[in-house]
Image 1 (cartoon, rainbow, N blue to C red):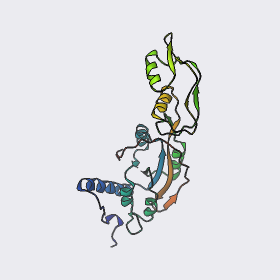
Image 2 (image 1 turned 90 degrees about the horizontal axis):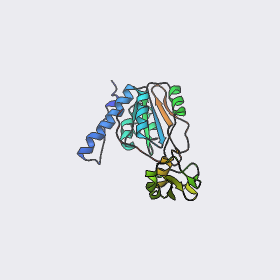
Image 3 (image 1 turned 30 degrees about the vertical axis):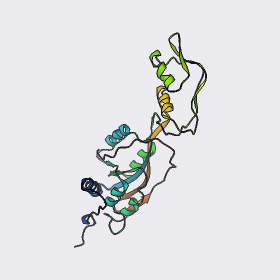
Image 4 (image 1 turned 90 degrees about the vertical axis):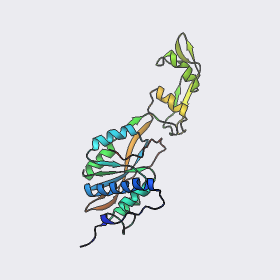
Length: 235
């Protein structure tokens, strides 16, 4: 009787005992998911938001989203034809580059593709984000702000004063310029002004399905984005 690919030994070198157990668990979790689900999709992301990602996980239950170190996940999938868990999985493993994640699911390809194409959530941009537009304020009152915040606005670099208790710009002020990289101060000002420039989006890159094998999916150019990502793989 032929030996199952899944029974192959895991080789994890250059790691201490503490890290070894964690890496072995990640590899085992990946292999369990391959056995449990029909398909696995590889995706990248723009402007990751952990809180929004938690909501996505809830929407997709009982499917499983998986994040971790690419090199360790690649071992779980198999890095070559000789050590892959299922035929063709090593091709998906080779697509693990940069910041990305996996979705293990029994949903159809059409359901997955449609959802990923439609899903996008606007949020406040963070430091390091490339501004998508120029935002400028005219001299005059800023009635949306309480008088108590005026010193903080000046601290952020805004030319303000209190005029009869009203926060007022003493001259025109450019918050940010299109294509410029936001500073922490600019990002905070935009948040206070309630300007949402960032969009949290997940972008499909490839998939593997039992009985069908590997398929590269349409990609999307990666724009500069800010990043928030945790290493936990919990649902």
